[in-house]
Amino acid sequence: MNLATFRTRVRNAVKDLDASAYVWTNDEVDHAIDRALVEYSACGGRVANKLFSGDGSERTFDVSAETGFLYALAVEHPTGLEPESWVKFVDRSGVVRTDEVPASGTNNVRVYYARNYLSGDSTWVVPEGDLGGLESGAAGYLLASGAAYYGGRIAPSIHTAAGLRIQSQELLGEFRLWLYAVRARTLEVGVRPVWDPDDEV
Image (cartoon, rainbow, N blue to C red; front, side, top):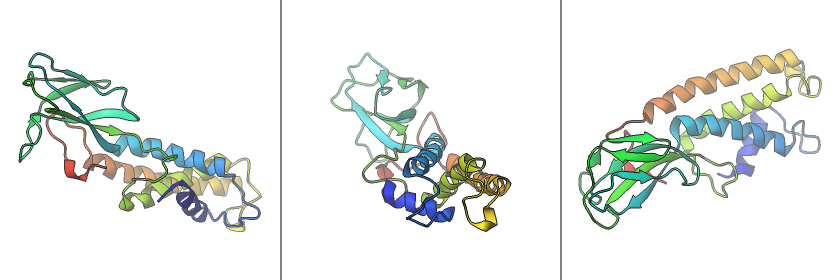
């Protein structure tokens, strides 16, 4: 999946199918997709991690400057154990402070964090099962943005601004209910993640 393919899915969802006379420009569709991605990322961001080397005295590790950083998910120390060893931590805007001081070692502290999904990525890593919910959100935002402006330019069944608003509200309602489920499965916890680190992308 990539942006161009997903854009086609969103156009299909709002029945904007005439390539010779699209109602919405690509930029408008992409903006709606980005809005949905921002909300989706906040509820269940892409899992990433960064390794640190403990020095036996420092217990603060900074991941705030990592691309698309949203919030810390878990701290593993030491790394490489089966099962993994999780350390309690506090996240202050990407500066993670562990309850205990990690021992000295090379790459023996791993901080897992959630990061944004970006529509401009050449290849999307949004899980296949989440694309339908994301499509509802993007389509809902697209209809909402065009409710007043595009009133008479779309299919007869939704040709009024009021019709666009109603459809938008229905889609965004579905989207928000779906986001509750996403949030529930990726709860931010301070001890260990509710996801399996092996699922990382």
